[in-house]
Structure formats: C-alpha cells, structure tokens
Length: 266
Length: 246
Image (cartoon, rainbow over all chains, first blue to last red; front, side, top):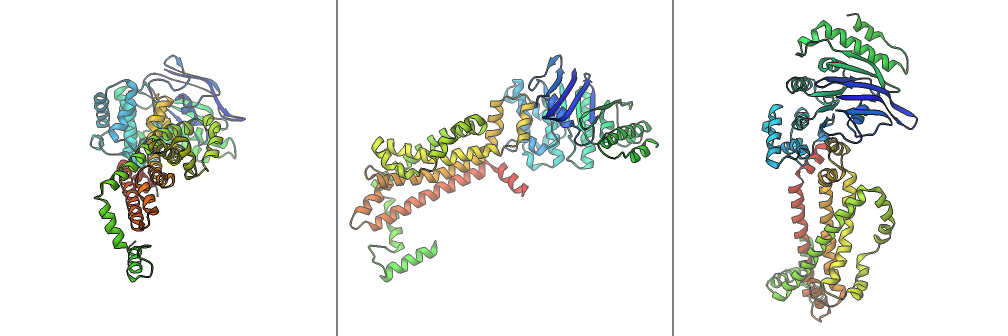
C-alpha cells in the first residue's frame, strides 16, 4: 500500500536521507528504529507530505504523494502540543472528522466511541491539560483511530511517557493493529519497542540517513510484555537490532561493538 | 486612592486651596452622583459610549483580519511594513484638528479617529499571537488533510485569540481616550468630553469638570474590569497552560 522509492532529503549539502527504499504492505506494522539524527522523523514527515523530499517518490495506495495524502493520521511524540488546549477531549477527537464530511452529532458519537476504545470515555468533557501525559497521548491515539486512516504514522509516540504507561500504550497499539487490521508505521529510538511491536523492523543508519537492514520479526502476533520479552527469539532479535543501531552510530567515530556483541552472544 | 481622597478632602475643607479651584473630594463625589440623575449628562455619556463602541467594533473587524493576513503571509507583511512604520508613530490626538476639517463633527469624525487609534494594539497583538502558535498543532491539522485556510481558522486564530482579546482590551482604553479627547478638543458637538469642556469654560465649572472626569475614569474602569473578566472566562485554557508552564 505504501511504496517509497529512492527517497532522499537534503538541506543544501547536508544529506538527511539518501536513497531510502521501503515497501509497507496492507495491515502490516512496520517499526523504524535508528540512532538519533538518522532522519527517522524526516522520513515520517516526507511520508505524511508535511515536507517535500528533494529526491525520490512516495506512493500511497497507488497515488504519488504530493502534499498531504488523504486518509492519513499522524500521532506525534509531543501530545501536549498536538492536542488543541481550547477544545475538550471529545471535540479534539471529533475535529479531524470534519474532513470526513460528518454532521456534528455523528462526529461526537464517533469521538465517544473512539474514546471508549482507549478507556477514556469519562474524560470526554475534560480539557487535555487536565489529564496526565499518558492519558493525553491516549486521546491523540483515539483521535487518529476515530479518523479511520488507511495508514497510521506514529512519530516516537511513547517517548514522553513513563515506563508503565508506555507498555500499556504499546499493547493498545498492538490491539488496534490486530483487531482493526490497521496499517501502521511507527518510528522509535527504543530497540526493545521496535521488536516488540513490529511485524518488521527497519534499521536506519545515519550520516546520511539510509536503511541499514530490514528484519522480519518471527514472533507470534499475540505479544505479551513479560512472556514475549523473555522469548529467546525476542532476545536474539533485539540483540541483532541493537548491534545494527550501534554499528550505525559507530560509523562516524570510534568503533564500539562491545555491548552489542555481548548481547548477541546471549 | 483613599489617601488621595483624604488629602483632597483636608486641603479643600481647611481652605488651603480655594474651594472653587479644588473642591473637596466629598463634594465631587456628591456632584458625580447627582449627575447620574441628570438626563442631559446621561445623554452625553450615551453619545460618547456609542462612538466608543462603534469605533472599537470597526477597529476589531478591520485589525483582526489584517493582522491574520500580515501575520501569515510574509510577502504582504514586507510590502506593508513601510506604510505601518510611517503611520504608527503619528499620535492620533494630533489628527483631531485635521479630522475636524475633513469630516466635520459628531460620529462621522469621532468614529474614524477611534478606529485609527484603536486598530494598532489589535493589529500588533494579532500578529504577535500568530507568531506564538505551536507548529506541532498546525502540523497535526495539516496531517489530517486540512488546508491552509482551515489551519489558519481552526488553529492559528483560536490559539492567538487570547492575545487578540488583550489587544482589544488595550484598544478599548485607547478608544475611550480618543472618544472623550476628540469631544474636548473639537470644541463643539455633544458627549461626555463636551460636558467636561463646556464646564471648563464656565466661570464656576470646576466642580463639574472634576465630577465629569470621575465619570470618565469610572467608565474606563468598568470597561476594563468587564473585559478582564471575559478574558479569564473565555481563555481558561490559556491561563492553565501559562501557569502550568512556569
């Protein structure tokens, strides 16, 4: 459904991304992981049509992206800035549904349904700033879900919440991916998270940002925070991803493969 | 405030200054209350407030869209910058005689002056508010496929609204100064300023001048209080974010 061919982005002489080729199939959950400064967010913004890449093309559902494509939703890391503080939680979730041409009543009903599915129906009349960080991010996930996008992009969505909340939200995303068959592309800097969530992990290298390797996650689709993370296949995969990410980071400086090698031998 | 009241009272009663020159505060207050029942005076206040309200309304209707345009289209901003820099330093009170020559007297002359003077704070606050809009909020709506106009309306304008409201409140004060000032300086017509000017010209008018001034001050205070209350009520989110951030 999503085909990225020869994608590149540069500011003057500085190449943020070079020759990125990636295909995402319908109902797939692909995670993109890489060291900081590898252009993960830039890649996501190119796909979302928020910035125009300087080279290559992005094709979504057979249409080349030029500007923001239809049927797309983005969940940003910065939930507090992404939600409108002057709107109630319900109205925040209902806002994008205007693009769907729904009436006011329908928009509100859809918003409440989405809030119920993330366990926040009681907060519908509150304002985002009256909620905790984890709850706010749930609201922005509900907003994306209510919109029923054909592709959901998530830009380090759990980077600003505590560990427990993070695990809850990870499972929430997995549930929607499984139940609704939603196609998701999720950017993270967390190696464990990329393996735990992904059907496939794309590891980026930096300077310039490019794809180092794609790994298919061989874990069963039903995942569990405790059991999956203890699975030997998970441990092996996260070690390999870790080695690739660190290897990418070492490209520009001294080689330091020690910790990754250690993990790989486990 | 109380100290001033007391000082004026003592000075007046003790005969340190001539009573007809600076009447004691209690006499001024009594006269001000008396004026509240005076139909001629009340008519004057109504005339002034009409000019004030009309001027402020038109200024808002002109300055907010203009501020949105200047704040969101850099090319227009650059083009208009020179005109603004030329016009802005002109004290609007200095335009009163010119406006009198060109526009005569009454509302036709008062309202354009008020509009001119009151537009500046609204214009600048709108532009400043637009600079403060969170780019993530704009990107969020853009990513859902909303166009430029929709993002301007649904994010930028809403986000800048508290700044615009503050601009309107400042402009309300400016508009009142201009409304009363124009009447005082233009020398004919009617209104609260006219009442003060005529009392000033009368041989025994000091009490009326002061009582009228008290009313002008009270009106300004009431307007400001009402607008502050309105802002607090409408922009609870803005206050919550500001206090949360600090």
